[in-house]
Image (cartoon, rainbow, N blue to C red):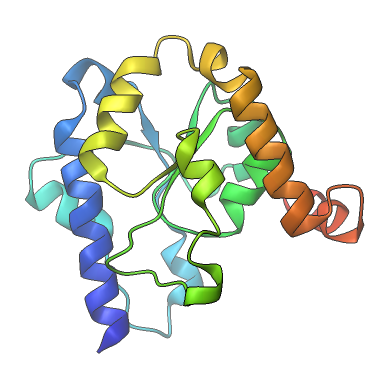
Length: 178
């Protein structure tokens, strides 16, 4: 099925990313698994199972710990798929990187450039090896990259265009992240 194929493609994307990171950086990443208990009645893929099977050792954090608190305390947040959480960390102005795997997530022609401004400033990554190279480069001081004018302008324009930061969607997302 499309869903199954997409999940496997995302897992493979992430495996390439993790394997391409410097070991010294991989060991400092705290990985928050998806709260699978929310999917107890559905079939799901455990990404963590595939990571272990491929000798990727991650420091995991309990999903019982408040995700909002984790995001607010992070020096850098990396989202491994498109979800509400990448918007939350962008809205909170936390250094954020997220993956957009074009092999498993699709945009119609009308929106094909939706993430382009975020790709250009390296918030959004479509290539796992380039994403890991970028993380290897900025990991010690992500704030330097994040606070640059080009990144802040791209992020703020994206949020304003898509969420109307001053409006109801901004407040809604911030409130559900608490």
